[in-house]
Amino acid sequence: MRIFAVLLLTIAAASARSTIDNCQQLLVVTTDSWSTQTGQLDLFDRHSDGSWRKRGSTIDVRLGRRGLAWGRGVIGVSSLPGPIKREGDDRAPAGVFRLGRVFGSPATTRMPFLALSKRTVAVDDPGSRHYNRIVDERRINDPDWKHAEKLFGVDSYRLGLVVEHNIPPRPGAGSCIFLHIWKTPTTSTSGCTAMSERDLVRIIHWLDPAKHPLLVQMPRPVYNTVANEWMLPTL
Image (cartoon, rainbow, N blue to C red; front, side, top):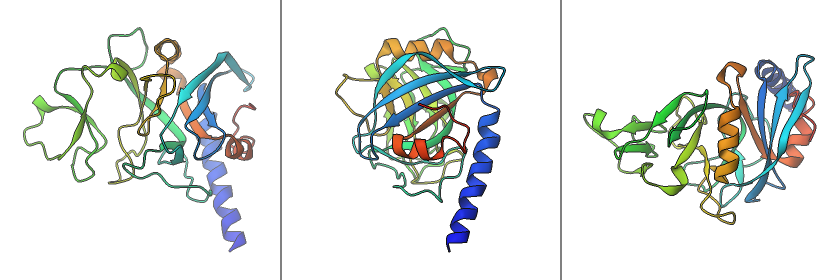
């Protein structure tokens, strides 16, 4: 059993190195523990010599009301200890994730942009074929969801960035995860990562899809364990 566990960790490390080797912009969110609701976000650029250089100051963030749990990202984490994310668990996903579209108010960004309408919703119903997608209700002939989150006109979603968690969607594994504006500096989320509008604008201005940006998010003790094998920056 121990040999099998070591093999799984080796495979995960190889996958991580391959994925992160192509990345030139990294967002690293760390917390004190799995249950911590607050965290720190650091931005890193990869230089031509392969080293990571921190960019700017550390950003304070708020996470899920119950902290973190392993999500479905670009690196398999099933061999690692820790809780597993589920729909409605009030935990933000831990792992390594690609970043998708910016949405909300028009913003200066090189990332793909989605303008919101009054009928834009994020579908969080695991029974829907549109689960874990942002859709415009006007373009859906037969909506099949029992509930979905409205995005237009919500103050926290004046500006947001899609975290590509649970892609392709696995029903019940968690949905509609974003980086977005926090309600207040002391208000946690249902599973997203929230921060001040100023800090989110700074990130969105910096991101460049040609540099294959990734979000790394996990408790700091876990991060320190995998950082060397996954070729992550030293914090």
